[in-house]
Image (tube, rainbow over all chains, first blue to last red; front, side, top):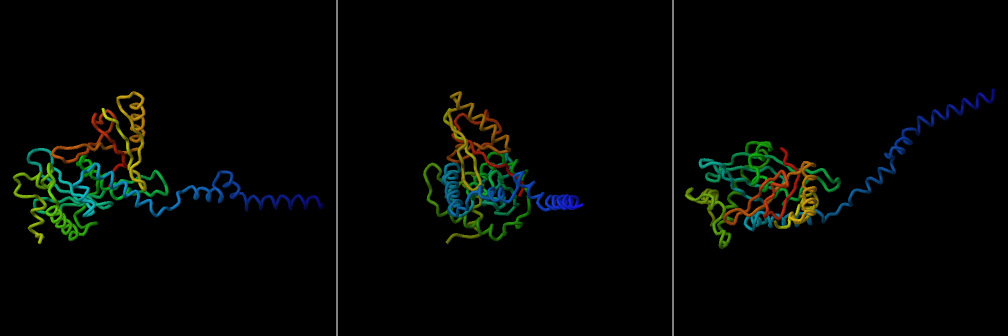
Length: 221
Length: 84
């Protein structure tokens, strides 16, 4: 009788232990235990407050070597890059684009300054946890610049299009166009690439594109 | 052909050198093509920055190593654009 009680108690304890500790033991066997989780967390790169600054410095250097001194200086001074694109064909319209880091691309009419649309695109890479998914600001602008030059239509088709005002305040955009005009007016003219891009694109177009419009609206004193 | 660098725009890092070599050297070309394909297989886009007319700069999107212009110095890879 005593032996039966002892065996029953043993079985009961075994069942309770299985219910109580079984999941933890199974997790540890599968490599998902608390120790393994702590180890996995330790593998993440240590937060480095200077990393983003160094990445941005590096990205600006790459941008300078690709977009050229004019547009690089534009980014450094104004915080955005303006790109003018002529469509295919003789009668195709020309559009101006303002490229901001991690914000929608803004299309506008360089002749009138009319804001046309916002194109929301992002370049997300989830390859390395801990490094984030955002490119350095200058790399984000550079990626937009390259795709806009290499496949304007593809980029526009890929983007989510909205009317101006969705993420950019129209007043801020008009102010940026005025700042751009002022910046171009003040910028020293270099030999070889003398005229601003707007002037080069608008031969016989009645002025200097956005600059002429913006100068009319916001004269530089 | 001039030596070519394959660069990747990487979040948190800036550009990272993936491979470098002279496409006229068979061994280099093989390595460049392999890395190029690896990036495209991962869904990356590839752009080749080039000088344009009148001092302006241009860029061309490429989908195969054979499309890389002979005078290209760099191919820049980055994550594909998606509607934000």
